[in-house]
Image (cartoon, rainbow, N blue to C red; front, side, top):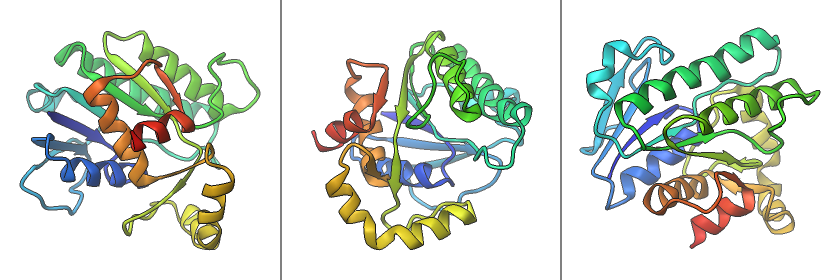
Length: 221
């Protein structure tokens, strides 16, 4: 299996990359992005592109992949709706449209979030735009799956790039084992999300929108 990862330097992306590099049935892992990710492995290829929303210059490097794991995104904190939509919806759809043309029928997994609004008309800005993004991806000629994790526990030395999240995780770290026990359908680890992505890439899944409980079953199955 050959897989493509966008967002490999983010917290979820780091977890997915780690699981892909460890998986014996993954032959090649290509990480697309603006800069080198600082990881060295015989399986790993890096595809450098200045703008993920315009992949024209690297199209020749994007063919032959069976799956794409897309966890690229930004926090909506402090952002106006137009800017958040441009990145969350515009960039994601542009990349997915290119990949659907180059690899029709490929598995495309988009990391959304718990609380995403599929109606596209709710009051919460980020949830509404994520919902619009999910709906548009599901209409493309891809085997598209939407992952909606809740709280994510970083393992294996992985950290969020967002300082506020790093502080939050540092404070919450002693409580996370208790939260995982008390709220099994709310908390997932970076390891579990990566394992769930690989499970869907290998076998598909009965639902196209997967909540935390679905992801945990896949990771443990």
